[in-house]
Length: 278
Image 1 (spheres, helix red, strand yellow):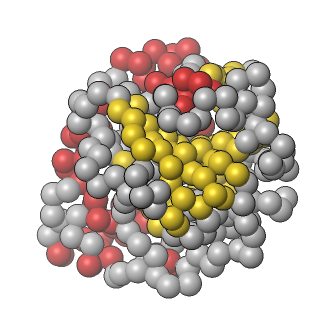
Image 2: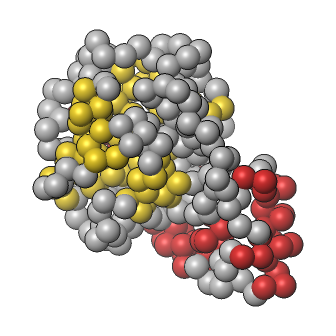
Image 3: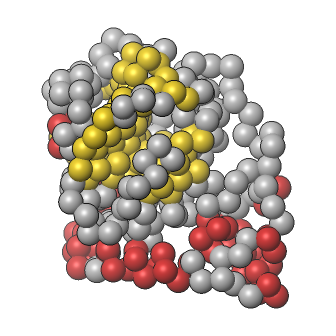
């Protein structure tokens, strides 16, 4: 089944499907259809309606609904120096060994390739720690800061759009290296320097990052890197960007700064939840 899934996913026109999905979800939904359509999606994917900032009928398109905000107080921030930046489920967490990150059991991939030339990151996270968090379609899709700090540099790597659900992660070698992603280097955090990587997936087609308003993902553009001249600061829990649909975020930490081995795979997280406690 794994090899069959790998073959089928490899043959899919993933970029085209993602662009098409993006275009379709941007089409305005007639007012009388919004409640039944969004209600179906909520029931199908387990969306908690009480967390939404607006009534279902106020979302003019599926794109608006996917990128929905939260009502005040829906995600209280833990009294911790490190919180989950997203709603999602832990894929894996723990040490980075000899420049390799665990993707799933018995399958790893290259740290250097993952960072895609992120300025200032060379050798920084060798033998450090990582946590990978998967966002399902029904999860809240905005991305927040896991701690306080400043944004120092960035790297954008175009790529394909394999789905990042658990079966695909098990089936596709080097999946996170092959998918489109944005890499951010954060500094002045309680953990020294941290790498923050939103990874796109099938039906995402784009990543929005507030500090890079001119960045256009899934647009056929080449790889790019840059520095944040003003090094914009952020507080713990501050909104930094959003996905178009479900996807993945990866956090990387320097050696001897933190131990994330207590974070178990499949653990469900809410944005703002403490990552330092088991």
